[in-house]
Length: 233
Length: 142
Image (cartoon, rainbow over all chains, first blue to last red; front, top):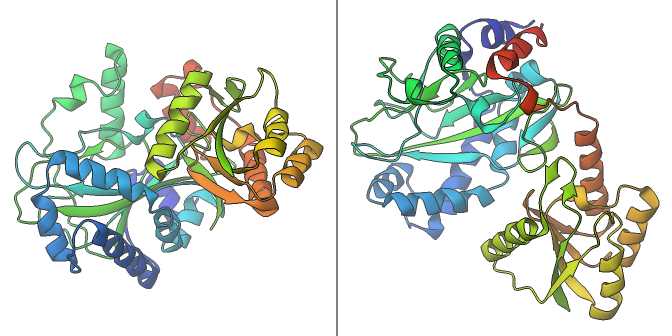
């Protein structure tokens, strides 16, 4: 087992790592800004982040759906982190067809990802997730992560009650703070890691990109060609 | 030149999609792509050759056809070759995968991708709970 595998599978369950090919990742960020020209004329990421804060929840939802057509994003992100991906899943992978570009808005009552495990979506237990922001995270606009032991304790607690992703985890107060990733860093985690957003104060929205992948040698669960494509890293 | 959607047997690879569900999926895809449809082709239950589509193509000369998934392509090589030969200029769209393309290479790539997925083990989610899936994650990664 590599150090990364040991860390992700038997250790904390998540790791913050430098993006290996930052020039390639820059392309991903720049292509995103270019695609956003259809909605806003802002060419600077910071202004774009500010503009997004004034959008309604439904406008942001429409925007996120339309960005699903940005189908090179998933390949660019894994190609920017080839060693990380191949260390966990070798070179032949099932790669999420359309990476998610995710906006997180400051303030109370904003759209945010409630605490969840990736497994809930039907990805297999052998799927890994990479999440990278398009800018430094200077505030609490990132994602908090519970380490593997704590996450599994929550799964067991819910399992005993016969529920999954229910009020036990939705209503819990989380003290974990989102790690303050810098631009050029990526967080990688296994699908049993509980994570989510907290309310945060800022003048700027947070923008990040995430992608899921697994080895073709490991079993699939519910996700199939609808979600994954075959890809060689 | 016309555009057609194609419904098939509800058993589509790992998916089970009734024909009205297939229509909903394709119509949503078409709406997003701003494509207008003129024909709806119902392939018969248990048919897996897209033969009706090919017969219709002789008369209606489709420019685009829309299917739900790449799993609806013929599995038998000779049947796939027939489809490629008869419809090599037609643009194929697969709504669930969100991909489209024309010609031999595109359709062979789709077919080869299906083979990779078919060759991969599947876990039956109805027979596994989260604790078991976690144990599997630990044990199969050793």
